[in-house]
Amino acid sequence: MQRLLALSVLFVLSAGFQSPPSDADLILTNARIWTGSEAQPWAEALAIKANRILKVGSASEVRKTAGRETQVIDLGGKMAVPGFNDAHTHFLSGSLGLSEVDLVGARSLAEVQQRVAEFAASHPEQPWITGAGWEYSIFPEKRLPTRADLDAAVRDRPVFLSAYDGHTGWVNTRALEIAHITGASGFSGYGELVLDPRTGKPTGVLKESAQSLVRSAIPPPSKGKKLSALRQGLRLAAALGITSFQNASGNPEELALYEELKERGEFTCRVSMAMSLGAKTTARDIARYAELKKKFPGPLLRVGAVKILLDGVIEAHTAAMLAPYSDVPGTSGSASFTQSRLNDLVRLSDQAGLQVYVHAIGDRAVRMALDAYAHALSVNGAHDARFRIEHIETIAASDIARFARLGVLASMEPIHADPGTNDVWEPAVGPERAQRGFAWRSLEKAGARLIFSSDWPATISVDPVRGLHNAVNRRTIDGMPPDGWLPQERVSLQTALRAYTAGGAFASFEEKVKGTLEEGMLADVAVLSKDLYKIPALEIHKTRVVMTIFDGKVVFR
Image (tube, rainbow, N blue to C red; front, side, top):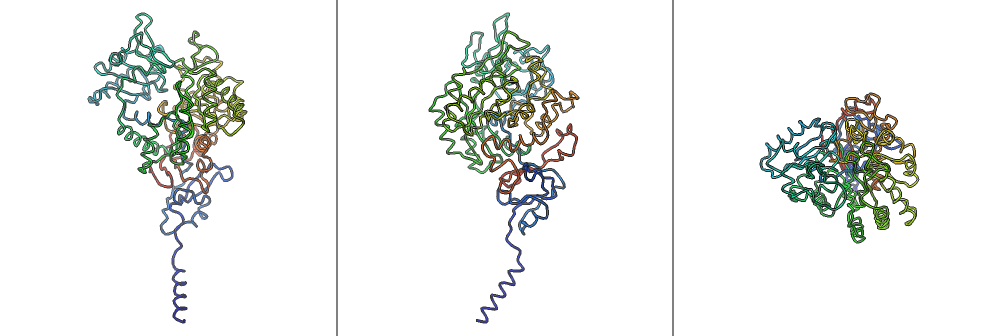
């Protein structure tokens, strides 16, 4: 008995000299942490256990969660924010584009020709030269490009170049020949095969659905190439602090690629996918997408939405406007669906439990989307649908208040309002409509919830920090114009940060698990090189992501 008592005492004493089991796996300390939480907006440190946030608060409070195995990272006073959520992207297309000719930032036709020629010379094995990123404003006298312009760079191989917005294609003569395109070629959908008014022959420009005439002739990438591209895209996203994105165009085949990467443990982003609906979509298709929602509930891979492309873009005069374009009075664009057909697609999708995105850039398209959502709510009853309208580059003044009344989310891309890219946009809409261009602040003041994104690859930058710069300043990175473009539509830094984090989480029905740095939330964090609240607003674009934590693990440093 005495021996048993002595052993018990020895056990108790020895236990007293052991440190308790480690609670936190990782602690970030000596930081300026913007949590995104209204209750506790700032903190000094946070602790992570597995893939969840264990503790947020003062350094002394968080230090109590440490054990022998805890990794502690001193951030040296740097700012940390919730991982960025790019709420509208076309991730596979953007990822594939990383290995194509990059025309973003080219300031002249000569520069485009040089980049294309150099890319072709360094890739002699590629049967097609493809790329994206050219801007409408770089061509002389604001004209559209021509096949002759591209022939001057590459004549012996076909070339297909997409505009930065993705809505206009530009090809050389060889591409037209391989695709057997003549002035009489037809296509399904809407858009335009641009013809020379003198000869009736194709000029080399294809708007909207007409791009399919050439795209169908381009050999599709293999599954292996797509997977490799997605891996490269995920690395880029991690380097930019993006820990979630909502894919705004998808299909079951693309979904299978993400599923394979997830099963292999290669995800460094949370993916929420919207399936594309088209003119031939049936009720059976919608029911199939509703079944996928059950199979992929998240939080790594989620299906829960559908996407409808309702119009085009202003620069190509294909966005659906309420009144004719100011610089081409003979057209006001067109919608890809009638109001009746749009109403049916929205109502059926909503009945199936699917969230609906509608691409609407022109003010007429925005009104049609709002009308379709109002119709669905009247038929299906009031509920938390979180309908979304994507882009909203122009809007009638009378439609601004409807967003809040209907609970429609305003999903927009600040980078699209970069003043350096509106040389063609502003003359097209005219001075009166331009005053409501990219009306972020007007929508916010009217009670609408803002959701921010990049629309990658239809963008001049996928970097969320560059988007923050545009949202807060509405100026180029060179500070032009000095007072900002339509400065009344700027938003605060806090509004912009929320739209890139918690807003995106709300937009995918995931606000209870991500979007803020609070205890119990998923541990997705971006660490910035500068404190955005302590630098001049015009220096925001100089900030870089120096560390990204996804699902509790450091994936970029």
